[in-house]
Image (tube, rainbow, N blue to C red; front, top):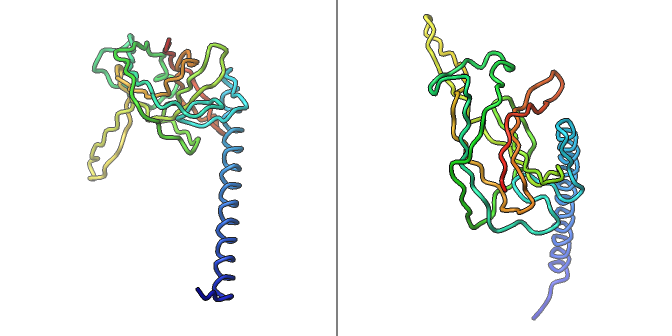
Length: 210
């Protein structure tokens, strides 16, 4: 078989470029993970949770081992005893709506498969931050989900303009899927609150998983 030197050189150059691009992607990924770890440590330090030096990524186990191929799914009922079952409250005053709900597990299931990974640590007041911690107060897993209490309503003004307003429901059901990690002792739920420069985590409620 006849080989063409020019073709061989082109293939070699393309292979080198692909390797360099792959290395660049790896460096970028590692850089994002380092930044995210720093953000996570700062965020968790405010609520007294330690972030270990092992790989800490959202929606997977925070351990040196491979992700578990089973996960748990809890159906949790949140109840605000100070309000009626169907009461909605305008989300105008953050502190007023931040009543600590009582939580009860209504269903606990195990499933096969792996959970998807969170790729960003972007918070907003319409979300809930979930931290799974062990008995020594170390973070094992985390996730960010939409706040199940938020109900959005749109009304039409006299001029025909649509206006949106957010309300908070008194009683809601939240389904949380997390790794089937025996080290996880409880799930802690937080509401992100903007302090003018960044987000703080306002504790909402805890759920024991053992």
